[in-house]
Image (tube, rainbow, N blue to C red; front, side, top):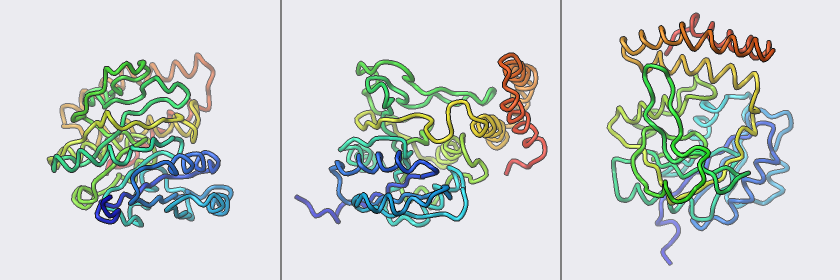
Length: 300
C-alpha cells in the first residue's frame, strides 16, 4: 500500500450552527472513509451551546473544532474554515449529510486526469429517500430570470445520470475545490451570507478558464434544510435578496435590464400575492426587506 502522506491532503470543512447532534451524525459517517490523508474542521458559527465538548467526546478521527465568536453565515464561515485548513483540496460539505466510504477517492480522481478541473461535486441523494436524486449537475443559469435547476432532482436513480462530466455550477452542499483555484479566484463572496454564493463563485471559476465537474461515481446523502428550516424567515430573506444580488453582480447590461423588467412585472407581484393569500405576513416582510436591501446597497 502506498504511503498515505504521498497522497494529497483533503481538508473537510463543515459548518455547525445549533445542530451538534446532526454534526455528530455526519462525523460518525466519516469513520468509514477509505481515504486516509484528511482532516475535518468543524467550524462552529456561534451556536447557543459550544459544541466542542460533545464533539471531542466522540473521538472522531482527524477532527478539530473551531469556534467563531460570531455567525459568519455559509459563505464567510466556509472562507474562515478554508483559511485555517492545511489541505491540498478543500471539501466543503454540509453537516446535514452522510458520507459514503469512497467519496474522497472518487472526488479526487477527475483532478488527476484533467488539470482544467477546479471543482468536483458528487451525486447528491436525499437521505430520507436514498433512491432519489437531488443533484446530478446543474443546468445553465438563466441570466434573464436568475433561475436554474438541479439536474435529476426528485427523480428515482435508475442509472440515468451515471455519466460524469462538466457541469455549469457547483452545489454548496458538497463540493471539492483545488487549493490552487482558491488562490487564483478567491473564495466565496462573503456578502451573500447564505444562498447563491456557490453560483457566484462558480461563475468566477468558469470565467477564469476552469471547469466544474459532476462526479457521478461519488455519492452523498443529504438531510435537506436541517439548519434553517423549509419555510423560514431566514431562508426567505436570503434566497430572494441573493438572487437579485447575484444577477446584479454577474449580468451584462442588457441581461440586467431584461431581468429587472421581468422581476418587476412578474416575479415581484406574484411572490407578494402568494404570501398575502397564504397569510404569511412574516415571510412577506422578509421578502420586502430582501428587495429593499438591493435598492439601498451596492452589488460589490
